[in-house]
Structure formats: structure tokens, C-alpha cells
Length: 240
Image 1: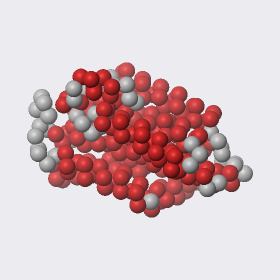
Image 2: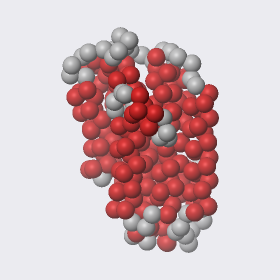
Image 3: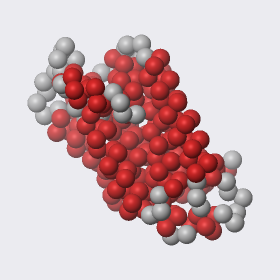
């Protein structure tokens, strides 16, 4: 247990030492929060913009860590033959995935916590109506999107390729799922497209918990299914 904890700690330090990863996971979402809340206008229906924007951007942070940084890290290890050396140790793909998942989700936790602190201090963010529901939704969102990220990292040969593929998935998702643009302000066609993305149930579940609505069983089932299927395929397809 101590060994895996040390590995997670080292991986998190390595991620934080990468200026681009640290900036886009921590500073960039905070800048986006400031940009989106400059007008101070409530959303249709009267919900304060900050009470929707912070939950939305928390999924942005999760997606960036899970779909961009995580697969790029694994692919870089493959490209630099780090994985080849690890193959000679008792480490298994499951152990490697677990350490990488934990480290990158800790990065997402830091990014989400920073958004919440800024929201409270600067914009009078309302506390979640159902903290337990938000936590459950956040964890399932992290696991489902990380499953996809692990699948990419399991097979992509280089860090640059993984980054390109990850960004190609990430940006269409965040702009159609409601992670950047509130779904209340989208047209019907964009909402329909966004509903097909793995990020949409995550956004909906976290916002529902924050606003005090019951979590949709379908959203939870979809996130669990994505995690199990993508994670399972990643373990089977993993290449050292």
C-alpha cells in the first residue's frame, strides 16, 4: 500500500512540474470562470450563472485531466521505453492504470477545488444542495472519462499523437455537452449532439446534485457502463 501511494505521489509531482498540464488543469479553468461571469447575468430560469458555471467547469477540468493529460502521460512512457523497463518489474497493467488514474484525478480534484474557492470568495457561489450527490456524480464522471483516457493511453504510440487525439475528443465534447456553454442557452440541435457524448451525463449529474435535483439513474448507468467497458478494453489492449 505504501509503495503504490509513493508512486501516485511521484506521478502527481511529475504532472504538476509540467507547465502546460498545470496551467490548463488549474489556471485556465479559473480564467474561463472569470470570463464567463463578467456579465453577471443569470441563466434562463433565474439560476445565478456562477451556480451553473462552477459545476460545468468541474467537468471541463476532469475531461482535460482524463482525456488529454492522462493518455499523453502513458503514451510518453511508451515512447521513452519507460513501460518496457516497468514490464520487468512486478507491476501489472492494472496497477499502472490505478496509479495513473489516482494521480490524474488528484489533479482534477485540485482544479475543481480551486474553482469552488474562487466561486465562493469572488462570486458568492451557493453551496451544493446535495453534497453527497455531487461527490458521487463527480467520482463517476472521473471514472468514466478516465476509462476513455486509459484506453487511448493503452494503445497510442507517442505522446504527441495521444495529445492530438485527446484534444480532438475533448474540445467537441466540452462545447456540446454543456461543460462550457450552459445547456439552457443551446439550440435543440446542439443539445441533441451533446447528448451523444460521454461528457453529457457527467455535466447533467453534477449540476443536478448541485441544484438539488434527483440524479438521473440513466446518467449514472451510462457513466458506470463507460467506465467498465472502456477500462476493461484498455486493460486487454494495453501494450508495454
